Length: 376
Length: 154
Image 1 (cartoon, chains in turn blue, red):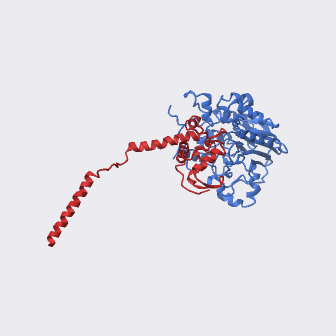
Image 2: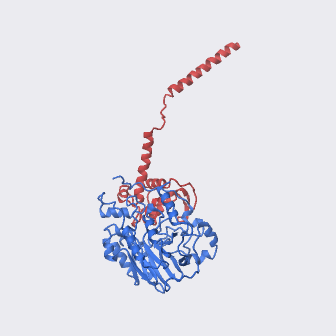
Image 3: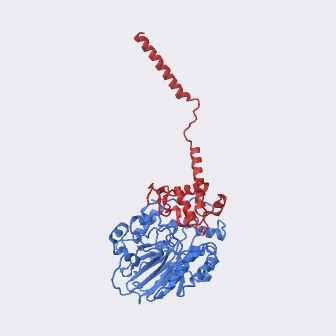
């Protein structure tokens, strides 16, 4: 059994015990999904791809105090304007649309990877473009923002990479899952550019399993949640998913076991994450996990490990730069979180039939070879 | 001619043929040059292939030095092939040749590679028999080695 299989079996054994689910009072709905496929032929789609959590109407004692919306934007991967204007235009579009929300969102979360190569001018460009959004903005870092200057510029612009606040009865936590990467650069005497280039290659072999929460932050999170009623809603923002989906691309945090230990007592936890540039849904232990789109480009689903609960997004047309990408609005209303994927240029975000899905053509892939530098 | 003479004659011919056959097996034809493949040869063949795979891997991941050395401009947007296709995923080399909707034509993998270079990457199309094309093709096929051939699949 491969290391990956072993990990995955452990994840299932530890986190997906029979009868353990997130509290049903905070269900996820997707208007775009319900819009069409739920009304016409949902059964076929559901049978083909997955069970999917639909609307439910159970009332709960501890819901958000009043309905509100917030917006998620992430993975803009900005180069300087002189290199790529396409990514700039997409951030402008997202910013315009977030600002135009009516009623306005209470705040916007930026979920990391503002820059492509962590340069100061890329991060500053991001700030400039997002200035269009006048509502409150909060930021967590992505690995592309960090590993050129080890977060110096990012911290100067956005302060701490992890934080918490309460809003209308919900405790929000911003987690940093990118800055605890093991040191692959010192022994190799890498320049900041080289360090960043390895980190910026999703399928590279050099930066290794860099995604993690870290003991210090786990302790901080435990302390942060200590005074919070275990049945009340907690929403955790992170760049990486907080479970193990596909470690070779860091579609995970390596300390997911410890994260689960901390979150286990809380019954209403929702993790909203970026990094994967794709629609994802999973339930692990008492936590639900929702993957967000990038504005820059979509990643294909990994060749294995896609959660069974994920209803895949439609196969994007590579000739349309606005396909497969976008941003999200999330509404918290009484008994549920409602996620709406704003995928530009698509009426149907989710696959309608197997040919719409990249998963309908199985792949067996090898890791890359030209960047192997071990052993030193 | 008696039956006995015929028999002797036949035996003589048979022995001659037998002798010649034995000689052919022992000595071999004068111009024989085929030997079983040696481990050294196998390694050389594999090295020749893997060298192309590695070159293709570097091109696919936007390595500027390799692109310069091979005299190609695969992208003008900062995008590399691997940014949409980590591990050469979602390239589906096993499905080519096929009708490719985005090009509205019956296309090979090489056509598709050039389409990606020209459209999303806004780079410069490469010769379909060029070294760079063969290297890219080698990397993509090698990455997808385990996949099952499904030519024509959408």
